[in-house]
Length: 305
Image (cartoon, rainbow, N blue to C red; front, side):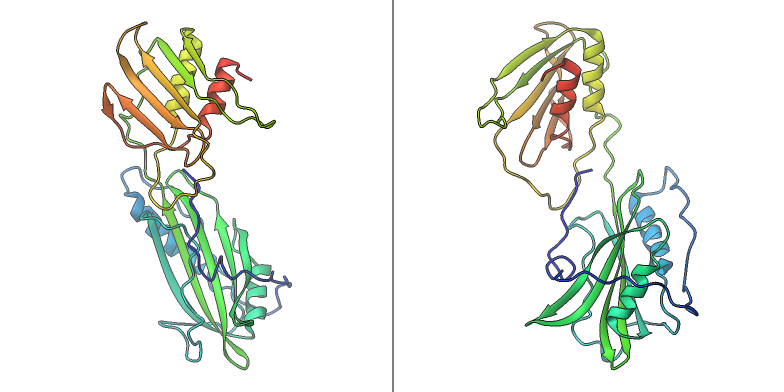
């Protein structure tokens, strides 16, 4: 899956200070440490897998003793307690939030949560948000290991003062499920010849490498090139970060025999968004990702430096 950028929000745009971690205090209670989710059934829709996982992530935060859940932002929370964005902008998103009223200051509550993180998680972001030089919220976010179905699994907490010694806490879980590549979108194993065309690329010394055109007939190399293309993931929906596009491209034309018709054609952008277009028997297929990794794989297979 391509790595998708997070929306600009209080979680990403207002990170101005790191939290100071503290040890967990005695007498604290955990309001949930749910077991790891079972692997998804093959027939279960990815959106349902994500929704179930989100529900299992929400209770994994360990909160200080005295935390009370509420159906809406606790009184006194004010406008600073806004649902943050801990997931990319994508249609493949499942998310849910809960609200809590917790004794203590926002900094102390977030420090406590960070010091006793959910099992199998890692801290992915932390800091404070504010306005006009005044800190109005403190937050922390955790990431969990991805699965074959879920490309991103996140859990975050945002705390704001709701009284002299109380904190309003928003907890958000967000999952991004992966769009699977169609089973039929595969370069046929019957291909016996591949024409590889490599456009000029920018070199570290400022020069450009020459264009190359290589005809591959070695059975082992042809098989490895087929496998490299067939291993590419489906392009995922959402906003994508596209670095500088220098126009470099890689194409592979697969044939049954020399001068025969193309049974598969791959056009990969080696820079920019790294998109890959695949045509099978003259029919365009759903877009693929991996344009950044395919050139390196081809170089290794063909022994190109």
